Length: 258
Picture 1 (spheres, one colour):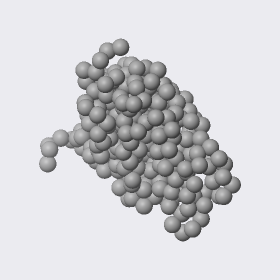
Picture 2 (picture 1 turned 90 degrees about the vertical axis):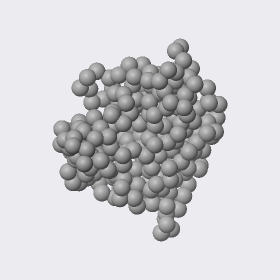
Picture 3 (picture 1 turned 30 degrees about the vertical axis):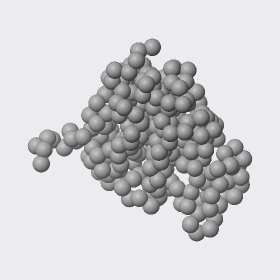
Picture 4 (picture 1 turned 30 degrees about the horizontal axis):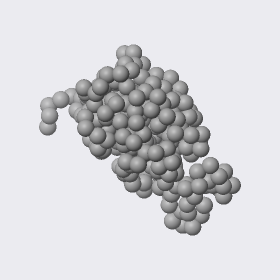
């Protein structure tokens, strides 16, 4: 036992290597204080959970990130917000966006998901990182490309950018009507899939991987965990009333100033 009061420990985070000094990883359901059905590390305020529990859960993630963490109000679009300083104390959102870019080691950026694809990007040499919410609509709208382009505008090099595709609903689990499948695959053909029971589906992680490759991002790792089948992760499709986990990334300390 640590002797700390509940909610003050650092939660378990699945860390990914996005380069020297970059702090990057994906939370799970574990380590928080939220009660069922949001148990335990719910990081979303807009799902009906006790706000005080969410606040304590987010404080734990900040301790892991070793910096304030900024969250956006996600709207399934392609808008990108750039942050060079931490959000104001007590702020729950820095605005509407589906991608956040940080140019400062004093602010980490996060994306909330419960089936959609969380994507983390980093150019450690330039000190620029991004967290991207790539759901079906955002992927078609070009949110991943917009995040990469915004990073480049702020000093990143596509050749140096490293990416992590986080846990999301898998193609074998994401059943959709055939006409919706056709609509999405018209924009991102690589998303076409079939469920494990033989019906039309979408493979959003495969779509994200293809879009990253087309944008010139070649260093990509994929945490192939299916939210639909993995009880350690939140899944809206599986549970409807549920919490949100996060992908979080922070630039390295001592990155070159621009």
